[in-house]
Image (cartoon, rainbow, N blue to C red; front, top):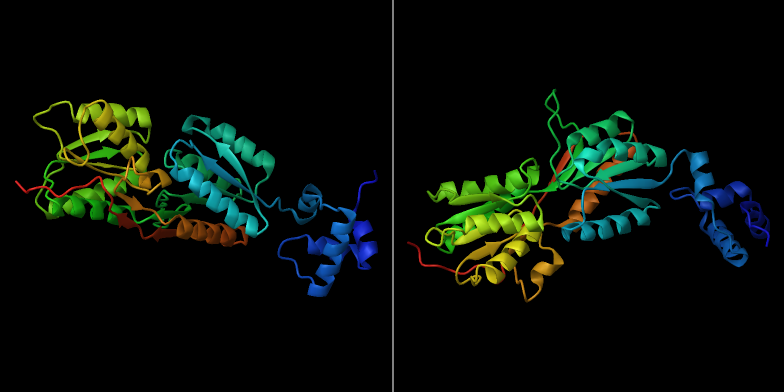
Length: 339
């Protein structure tokens, strides 16, 4: 069967071949009646535009690279879905790269091979070196869910979108103090992650305002198994256990709930209150009913898209966007008698 070409569509629609090309180029200007004739002809002939050929002409692949370190945290599948939907509406497609920090050089080589138009780095654990390498290679980069480093001249080195993590951490601390908790523990994510540091700082702000120290601290490294080990260590002494645990994300908070209930025989929230951060879909499940802080994924994705397209369009000034977050109270926090 003969392959249908743009020339065939142009001949049937009685338009120029360049009009066919513009019709299937996102953002190009075509008169509505002309577009309708061309699309009707394309459907009749079964024509599919050649994206590779178009990219050679426009020098745009219309591919956005999305770099992540892991998908175990259920916050990120939600991000992928929303980001793909938003970019596809603009005629772009997402190519997903999974990389640990030590694989950064290999990922950069892959990214350059696919000639992506821009990159979204949605990982709290990947180093800033990869982002800088991409920028030096001329590829626009936006950091998602992490804060960019401040450059030597005082401005941001890379555009970034994150939640107001310190404010979110402060809200949790104020809730726990207000409900009578006095031995509040923190379960950190990665020590190098800005999200974890800022959420902890907000918690400590609230505790300091109430004249309370941080009772205990563990590191879960944003990992289920590591969070389990950290929780076992934090609650090892039955005479000095925390009465509340704030985890840096819901993934670790759910690990904490499982460990406290199944391995330590504790009841949540009767024996200890637990709070997470992200408001992943599982947090609302009745078996968890987790009190948490909701990140506004829709606003974060919209801001990411805006910053990325500004850079693709030629804007070179990096900027940072902080999106407000909201405390979601459910069933894992109870009011206690202040002592």
